[in-house]
Length: 402
Image 1 (tube, one colour):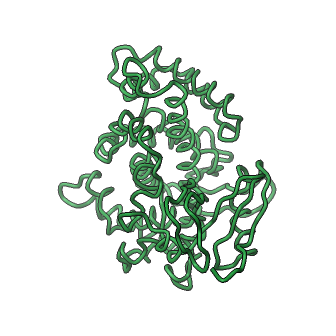
Image 2 (image 1 turned 30 degrees about the vertical axis):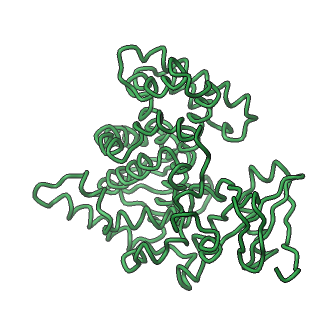
Image 3 (image 1 turned 120 degrees about the vertical axis):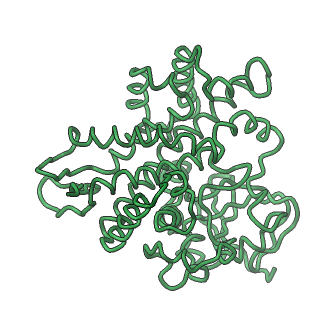
């Protein structure tokens, strides 16, 4: 508006995919508090990153309601997948989640790098990915996945690097997964078969759209949920006082007459809930939101953006902006949410995405992480491991509780 051009950051296509945290920091160093442009070849997107920017950009319902609007076709696709991923469906998976987490904990005794009396040294990034690799596909393929050991083996060897493969290779692998699962799905009422009706017989979506949605729903969620769970355990190891208070809360909850884990994981005023909020705030599910082209001219900051300008949100910077979160915005302090009303961070916090574009497995991921933390902390205290020969980044000690 004042004639000053918006600053521009050029990135390579590879960097745009692989180095998003670094791009976020480069953009911050370049433009400081102002919006800026990311250029990838001839394609350009405007990046916003403060609650004020988002408020000026605001969607029609004054929240994030239509931010990820993808059109009628996307809503049709979601209508086939969403029934498997409602909040109530996620809660119904609680017993299965608990069973799988308990099984995973038992396998840690065998897979641990170094085991001693009452002590395991675990490479948490790998172990958490193994857990999500087992549980998240099961939520979609049900017994068909559980009964087929080779399917789990295929995923185990196919997941590494899957997020960054060329699209046609990725879809080929997802197609193999789908065909193998449905082969064993006969007689099971599983979400995969219900969603597949959108392809056949309804012809509401193409096979490619179906497979792309599975890719987003399964493989992306495996990576994201495993990373957030790793972050949680790492922070608990670093913040022993909070870990102890969380453990005491879990014990107190379970000691209450008529305890129901379903009620506990749905409460929004617990340390357990605050931990999940804080962890996703500091380790977001996505570094940048999906782009949306604005439909009318808008003014953001001191810049006028014409209609059809693609805009993305830098989620890391939004979630750690001091104007929203205070001077300790980048520090781990879950209790901050006890004194904050959601209205206070309405435009300053993104978790899993929103409404039509939100992460398909949002509810599943939230419940799985809470069940995992309850089950782990009941049995183990998490500690950091002294760095010495044989110890690598990501190793944590699981100390058996007496």
